[in-house]
Every structure is written in C-alpha cells, then in structure tokens.
Amino acid sequence: MRLIGYVLTSTPQPSEDRQRLDLINAGVDSSDIYTDHDGECARPSRPQLNRALNALRPGDTLTIDTLERLGRSTQTVLAVAAQLQTRRAELRVLDLGGNTVDTSTAAGSMLFTTLAALTQMERELNRERAHDSIERRRQAGTNLGGRPLVFTDDQIRRAVRLVEEGQPAAEVAFDLGMSRATFYRRSKALDE
Image 1 (spheres, helix red, strand yellow):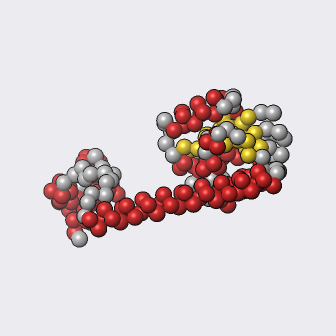
Image 2 (cartoon, one colour):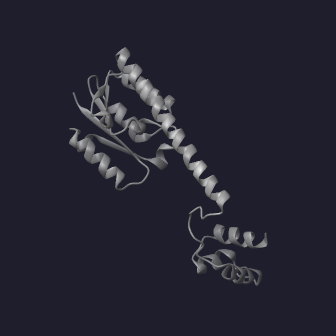
Image 3 (cartoon, rainbow, N blue to C red):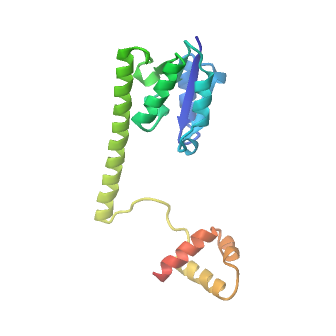
C-alpha cells in the first residue's frame, strides 16, 4: 500500500511548503506528491490531481491536508470520490485527525459526502461574509484596499498630450512604466 499526496495552492509559498511538509510527516514520499496551483485548477481538469489519481493502485491512499484540496464544490469532490472507489483506493484527510475515510463503505461514503457538502457551505459562507464586508465598507465610504494609484492625474494628462502630439501610446506608456491598457484605462477615466 502506497501513500500518494496531493497539494493545491493559490500561491506557491509558504502554503505549498507547509502542505508538502504535512504530507511528508504523514508518511508520503516526496516523490509521490503532486502539486497544482490555483490558477491552473480553475480549469475543469487539474493535471497534477489527474496524475495523482492515475498513480493510485488498489489499496493505495490519496492523502491531502484538507478536504477542500479535492475541489471547490460538493459535485467536484464527489467526482473524485467516485474515481477513488473505481480504483479501489482510499482517502486520508489530515485535518480530520489523519483518519482514513474509507469511501468504499456506506458509512465512509456518507461521511465523505457530508464533509464535502460542509466544505462547500463553508466556502460559500466565507464568500458571503467577504461580500457583505466590502459592501459595508463601500457604503461607509472607507478604503476598499487594492493597489494605490501610482500615477497622478496630472501625469496621465501630460501623457495624453504627448499621444495627441503624435507619440505612440505604447511608447508613452512604456516610458511611464505602465502597460498600454492601464494608460488607456486611466486616460479614459479622466474624460469621465
């Protein structure tokens, strides 16, 4: 029986390092750890998760640190569970105390489905809370965060004049240290 690890991160460090260390401490060989980054997994197929699933043999265990690593929705998590059942493999979720959730039994399958639904609900509640917080700050007129404007309106106006005098917009934007798209967006905002 072999342990296969799967890591999903939104940023390469330090989350990836922590997850990898947790998996190694749980007995997963570092060469058996597969990693997807959040930008990649927004697509329906996560290449490294697919490789991890393909590496599983009957009796092997897919090891993850949290259930959320398998997917963003209950449907996605249950699809992975079905693949595990087909391969006669087990799932070990470390944040559940390191216990194995045996998806081949009725009780294990029910627990897994319930946990997947709770994971999705928690994600949706967090999204709602964040949205409510932003809305309250917007109504209060407070700073919503984001990057501060690096260039003043006067700098943008001067750059617009240079373009009107015949200099290419891409060149003017490059000289300012911004993308052409940002230059156009900022100059359009001045017109409004």
